[in-house]
Length: 104
Figure 1 (cartoon, rainbow, N blue to C red):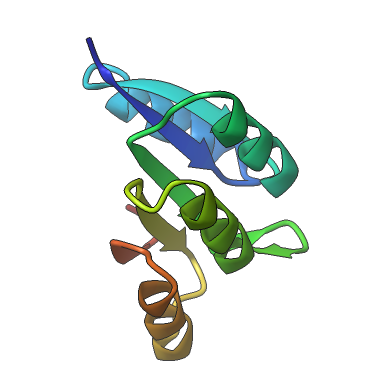
Figure 2: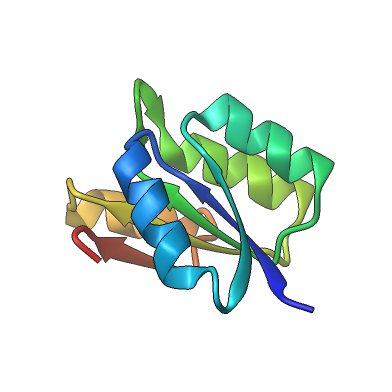
């Protein structure tokens, strides 16, 4: 049985590309907004989440905090096209496993 992966990114093309790249190894779900991502996480069990740093007007670190509060063991990887040392340090301090810049 495949592990479950949740991708949260407001760019539908990113979600589609990542789903295609990872669906052989993972059971992939996607969400294009933070609220939908949080709802999906609450409804199912995921072992890995890929979360965009900027999801529309929402800071992805806020979603990271909510997800880690629900399940501290989940691995969360932050992804962003707007990398900065400050945001990467903040993400890691808040529980992100790592921080990757786009394009992946």
